[in-house]
Length: 161
Length: 261
Image 1 (cartoon, rainbow over the protein chains, first blue to last red):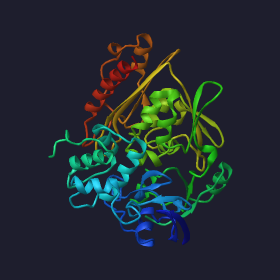
Image 2 (cartoon, rainbow over the protein chains, first blue to last red):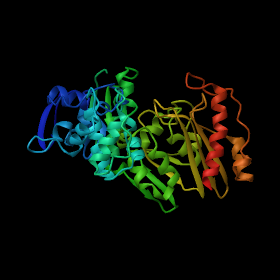
Image 3 (spheres, rainbow over the protein chains, first blue to last red):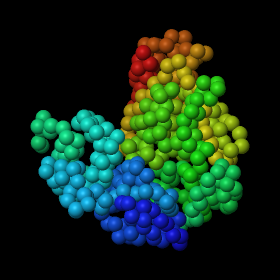
Image 4 (spheres, rainbow over the protein chains, first blue to last red):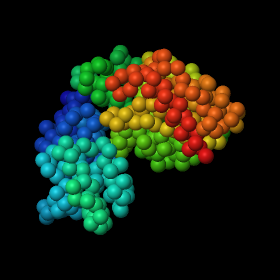
């Protein structure tokens, strides 16, 4: 066991990790941040996406010790300071961008990374960027719509299906 | 996953020293190795992460006009910084998905030599030089069959040098679940001839398609691409028969040549 320290959502946090401890496991079991979900554990589904040093990555496919000293953002850090939903989260609620909600943490973190890179993405660009995020309720239309709305674009043209 | 020690050296020399211990293994971005460890298909005693080595990061041009990519440069960074060799930057920008591209590295891909990976096709078609801590290896000598390379035990790729062709294009027929190439073809046209490298198709891993190279060196047009190569020795699995893959090789080569303009 070694001690691993990282800045998570702006706060310095430490915990114990073995060589094999995954970042997803470290966040959930050591730091009790269970908002990051583990869906497939094989880097297909994207439910575990968090940001490490500003990059969206799959935390089930990164070792905790690799993130020692890094700055990590998780879904828990997305809400505004007063606890209200941020723009992306609010848009997911407004446009029914979640059904069972299991994929939502990864969807929101991936959407945040996309909008940072590309503030007004087209529908095709959003779908392309979400390639590594799977929603098993298959609610993609409304997820795409929510992200478009969060970027301040008119979503009237996107069919509600 | 079996447990292992973890080390993250800051220099190539320290990494080589750390890899000297028995059953130690180098770790790039881990996008293949970590899933492999989860399946208990590998049991290293120690993982030596190379991602903290600053001298192995980044994209630059050398005095011979080659694009040099540090071995732990992520696919995302190659896509963003590789404008001097646009076909290679495009290849990097279409590997996996954005989160995988943010972690996966060129060195990791080439060291693994997955028979369906994209980078081996880019490196082989470009006639790249794979630079390690101890020597330089020509791509033609480096790839030695599925998951097999010229790398010795404990030898690590430090950077990869790509001659920039006059025209080049990579066409990938994606296997939609894994996002690996069901078949991928990289065509590179140089002043002294055309090189065509195929990934995803052969039981022997990435390889050059000599008949297409010969025909395209004489006449660089999509019409000159020969009929599909022999399906013998092509991969057959639930995603496609060997004949289907052989067919795709010719189709993608034509598309790649057409896209070169």
